[in-house]
Every structure is written in C-alpha cells, then in structure tokens.
Length: 397
Image (cartoon, rainbow, N blue to C red):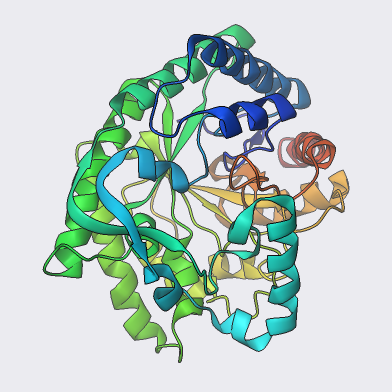
C-alpha cells in the first residue's frame, strides 16, 4: 500500500455519482445477468474516463466508482446465494433513534427519496420499509465470480490507461451484510456471520490477487448503535462489535494487512445524526481489524472534532489513517486552506507518513442515489488535492 512518504496522498471512499449513461445502463440491465456486450463496452469506457478524471483532479488512489454495482451493499444480492425476499422482515428490524427523535425530518427525506427514485437509501434505510426485502433463507455461498472478475479487469485496465500506480476496490463487510439481511436459516447469529464471512472471503481474496487494494465498507458496525433502542452501555456494544470484527478477520485470513483498508462511517444519509456513537468508544476494537489503513469520517459537523481521539490512542506501527478532509454531507465545497488544516492536524497527531487525505463517505450509495450533484463532487475532490498540496508544503518544508 502506498504511503505519504514525500507528500500527502489523496483518495476517497469508493462510490461516485454515476453519469446519465451509466444510470440508464443500470436501469435497463437484468439483475444477476452479465451485461450484454454493448453495455459492457459502454461501462468499460465509462470507468476508463472516470479513473482518468480522478487522476486529472489529483486523486492518487482512485476506484471504479462502483459503477457496475447496484449499490455499495445492495450488489451482494447478486453475488451471494442463500437470500430471498421475505415480506416485512426489514420493517420489523431496522429502526433508528435519530429517526424517532426527528420524525418530520425523516418524513421529508423519505419523500424526497421516493420522488427521485432512489428509495429509502437516501435517508439511511433505517426506518420502516413496507416492502419485501432480503433475508437469509438458505446456505450462504459466493456465486458472483464472473461479475467480480469483470469489475476487477475493468478497473485494472482503466488504472493502467491512466498511469495510476495504485487503485482500490470496495467490498462490503460480513457484519454489514448480516445486519441488513436478517437470519432465518442458521441456528445462531455467530453461525450466520461465519457463513457470510466464508462467502465474502472469495471476493476479498480475488481483489488482492488482482493487484488491487481491498477496501472493506462497514457502516453498520457503528450505525447499529442508532438502531438499538434503548442504547446499550458502550461495554455491551463493544462485545457486539467485537463479534463483527472477528468475522471480518476470519474472512481476511491469509491476506496481508498492507493490502487492506477499512472504511467505517455513520451512514451517509443527510439526517441530524444526533445518535451516532462516538469514535472514542469503538476505535480500540476497530484497530483490531487485519488492515493497514482506516478511513474515518472527520470533516462533517458531527465528527470533525474526533481527531482528539488520537491524542490518547497510539496507533500500531505502520498504521495509516485516512481522515475525511471533505464531506459528502453538504453541497458547500471546502476551502483548500480548511482541507490543509484538517490534514495537518491529523499529521501532527499520528505522523505525516501515516496520513492519506480522503472523504467522509461515498458521494453516491447506489446507481440512483447521490449525496451531492456530480459537479460538486468533482470540485470537492479537486479541493481535496489542492488542500493536500498545501498541507504537504507545510509538512515537508
């Protein structure tokens, strides 16, 4: 994994706003089936342009924008066998204390989501959903090898064409998958988590074997706290989180830590987020994951102060922090001086070589849902690069 040895490197958290041609392609495709040749060629060219654009605006470590995925975690429905639609299971399972505190706010967000066709994902997908959704109803098995291979080759080719030294590919964590899809098959939650981890290990290994950096996306590791009503004591939540960390480490066994980065966030929806668990309560457990880099929210109004955690937490040797220096949570484009200030703050706490500048979360969580307009996304990424350059001048005078 690249490190900031001579200047602050830049990256983001994977999912990017899809252009109209990709949205149309995704709407027209048959889920679970390969893209027809013409559609695959269109997608290849779209990802090639995307990676080149990332390099152009100054992103050192790009992704494929998750262009070929229905959503950052929804794509799992096409890659794992053992799940089927069961009426009402999600409505009974996913709620949220933030939603309960601000019902009018979430009603407005839900209405906006329904109006633009992105569904409940816009407001976090944590409220009642009166529709059938996926549950585990049989043995979990990975069946997405063909789609994965196409994704990886597409990203490798695009990175080579753009002259990019390193690219990353996001994949969902076992804990997030299990929490979003209730278990109706396995005898225990531990058995269920283990089965999901075994299945996802196939994807994780393939990413690394393709020469790409594996990013693990795991928002449910912390948003589950919001769904627990009343909230448990931090010690009890630690035990809950530890079981998810153990499952992920089981899936990552045999993969070198320096090929893995872990992204945890408090959900990308634009709600108040007053019930987010604080980083200080979970950082010790998170750092037990077999990864070299950890991408965390650090730029939005709810988590921008949490750099202070690293005044007391000593990172394991060689660990990299990827703090969000720009955020998905507002259309306001960060000034590069603010970006530089955020980067320098982290560099002084953990060491300049241990910081890569990133974003809080993805700018789109599915092919149809976006958090900011596409032009704003690109300007934020450009300001990320400009701010990283300013920070580098101050850190390597």
